Amino acid sequence: MVTRPERLKIFDWGGGRVLEAMLHGWDDWGSSLIRQFYENSGNLEKSHYLGGRFENLYLPVDKVPSVRDPIRLARAMGEEKLRISSVILFEPVDPKQNPYPPFWFNCACPGESTGLHDHAQLSKLSGVFYLEAEPNAGNLFFHKEGFFDLEIIPEVGKLVLFEPWMRHGVRVNKSSKPRLSLAFNLFPFPLPDTNF
Image (cartoon, rainbow, N blue to C red; front, side, top):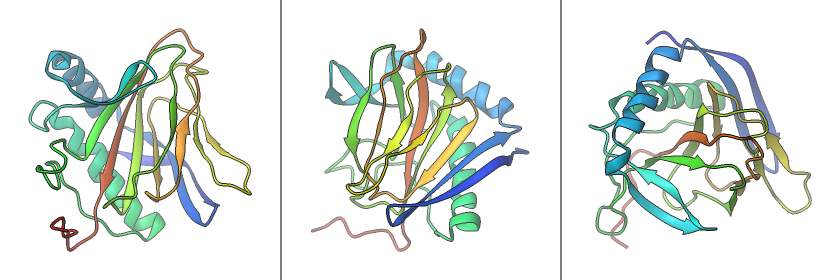
């Protein structure tokens, strides 16, 4: 995998940090990941039924092995650019409480959006990578009282990393095609104790 960030920006916003970068050279593993997602779409596990759709779509890592590339790159960039060390998991952190892996796909059709939420429970770094996005496909936005919203425009090949406690959502997809993204969480070491 030869991938390097371009047009890298880091925003200090609302007491947290957000990294935005276009990934040059992602085409090989990106096209493989898109193909693996669609080839296995009949095996999707789903969660978070909101606004008339399932927001999170899950596949096990053996069905989408190309998912390892962007997540490994994100971990390295988080450590180098944000000084946040983390570990990658491709299996559920605590299968008893949450049977899903800590990465998932979001497919938002025209007219769909995602409400405000965070990923703060156990993770240390969160991210999203855009696989398919037309112009006006719905900005990722970060919201905090007392601040103007930070808006990130989705573009194919763009990676966004952020601190998990930061509340965020996605604006309405006003394009004519679905927006497909990969989202994930990375974790502290040692791993959190889930027996509480």
